[in-house]
Image (cartoon, rainbow, N blue to C red; front, side, top):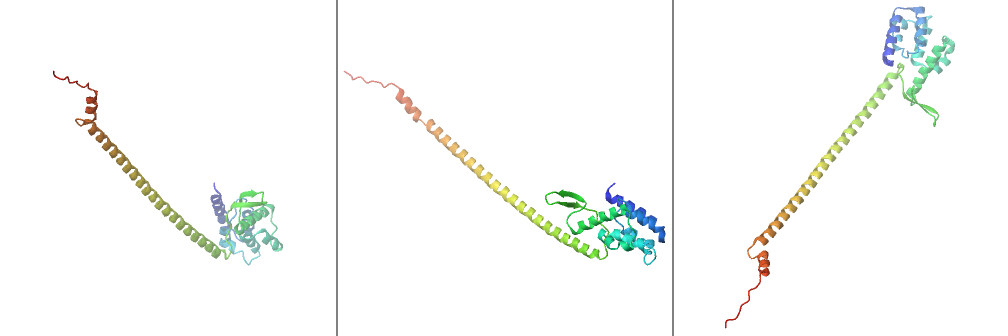
Length: 229
């Protein structure tokens, strides 16, 4: 099962449980959710009406814990530790992991990556997303808009390069055809010249009294004439 599907199943499970609980009965559920090693998103649990109703009551601290794990960091907890329940080790580990995800959003790198020993740092290549903090939606929309504009420009550049490659290919084909035509013309010219030369020699040797006849006459013995009387 992939990470996203496992997250979805866990969220559905906790949301269903939270919907049937009220007041202090939600405290164990909040502790379980924030301690679970495979759950890193809490917005859906926060949006459950019975959880929202914790605000302004003596049990509002559990709502604050959920908000801390949804949007906060380890530094936020240290700054407000006096009014929040003490975290168990599993919660401490989870909150520190979530803090790494937040750092990955603002600084290049995330949970899945590689260690650069030369620069003595961990380069993040992938990270699971956290719940959106209040007021963060606008900046995310702007980021996506910038990404879309960059993608459009890149697509235009790629299309132009494809057109250029096509035009160069056509020019190459045209040039190759011209060369082939010239070669063919030269071949025809050479063939025609050879044919004409051959016919010329053939006519010379076939004419009466031509070279063959002349040679033949020279090879015959001459008759001597004897004087009469």
